[in-house]
Image (cartoon, rainbow, N blue to C red):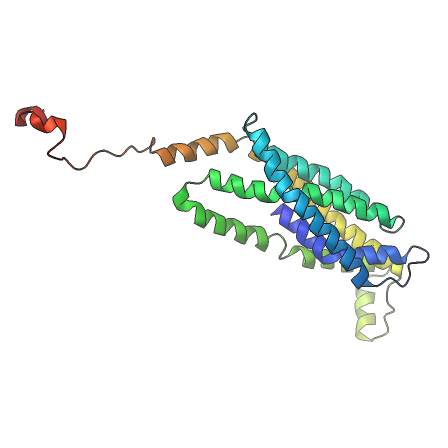
Length: 257
C-alpha cells in the first residue's frame, strides 16, 4: 500500500512539480508540461523495467541463503528510495539533470517491491485461498494507495499555498468568492507542492518499517502454509476399504480389533 501510495503520487504530481521547478531556473521559464511529462514517463518506464525484474532476481538468489530475504529487500528498497527522492525534490529548482537522475534511481529502488510482495502473499497462503487473498490485497493496496494519494497531495499543497502566501484561510476564502484573489507566485506554487510531496518520503519510511516487522514472521507463516498444504495439521484418515487390501485377508475379528 505504501509503495502504491508513493507511485501514484509521483505519477500524478511528479511532472507538474518538475515543471514548476524548471520554471524557476533561468532560461527555462517557457518549458511545457508535455515535454516534462514525456521525460518523466520515459524515466519511470525505464525504472520499472529495471526495478521489477531486478527485485525478483535478487530475491530468488538471496532466498536460498537467507529465508527472510524477501521482506528485507522490500524494506531496504523503500528506506533507500526515500532519501533519494527527497534529494531529487530539493534539486528540482536548481539542477534538472540531477533531479531526473535521482528520480530514476529512487524509482528503481521503489520498484523492487512489486514482484516480491506478490510472491510473499502467495507463499504464505494456501492455494485454495490465494485468489481471495490476492483480490483483497489488490483492493486494499489501490484503495488506500494510489487511489487517494494524488488527491491528498493536492489538498496538502493547496493548504500550504495559503500558509506560504501569508494569508489566512478566511481571507483567502473571501477573496475567492469576490473573484479578487491574485494567483500565488511561482515560488509559492513550487514550494507548496514540494512540501506536500515530502509526505511520500515519510510514507516510504513507514512502509520500510512495516516490511522489517514482516520479516519477523514471514518464515513462520510460510511454514504454516506449507504444513497446511501437506495435510500435517489435519491428516486425512482412510474412509474406504477395498477387497484387495492386505488386511482384508485376515479374519473379521482381526479387523474389528
